[in-house]
Image (cartoon, rainbow, N blue to C red; front, top):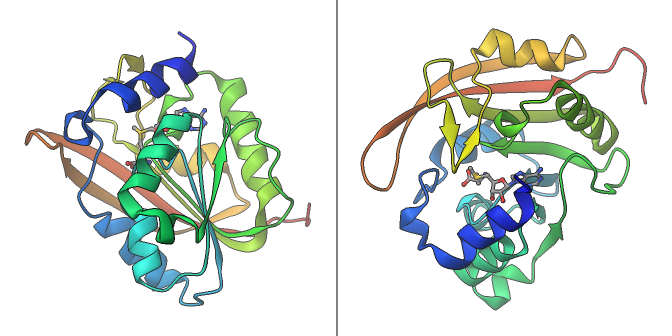
Length: 210
Ligand SMILES: C[S@@+](CC[C@H](N)C(=O)[O-])C[C@H]1O[C@@H](n2cnc3c(N)ncnc32)[C@H](O)[C@@H]1O
């Protein structure tokens, strides 16, 4: 299944309350970013950000340099609607595949991904994704990735997902990503079912600068 039209149609046809991953507040991501990166000028990218409330939370917390990337233009349109024109104008919006987007080198202090990496079930796609992280995150930057846990759902939105323990997720990234924190979160879907997530917070500390 071609992911772009699929995701784009979902965001065009569904209410946000019909999307299982949707949060009303991105509580854990916001708390982790504020704990590890206090500099409000830090460049933050939310990859596969969809219509997440994270960007609004970061704006409210006074972060100034925000980018949201998503494969689906309709996801970005929904996120912009949610913020309103004035706040949306303070954010850079990129409609692209995270694995191939032409991102600037060493640009970001924070790479945030909630519920995107787990869709990369092919090893080659994961390699491309991690190359993007190495390319776009400055050495010393924070990489926060959240996926379904090993006991989480096997599919999401019609796609199979790869599920991870913290050790397995960190293992995908390797030794150049120093694990600072691992967490488990029980996400409650808008209709009240539970989905366990694994969060890994890492510092990108490449042995040799890219
Ligand atoms: C399960 S949703 C999570 C959205 C958001 N991160 C959140 O936590 O609310 C997955 C998102 O990733 C986007 N997506 C899927 N594959 C992608 C890819 N290869 N590159 C960029 N975005 C992608 C989808 O359009 C969708 O918005």
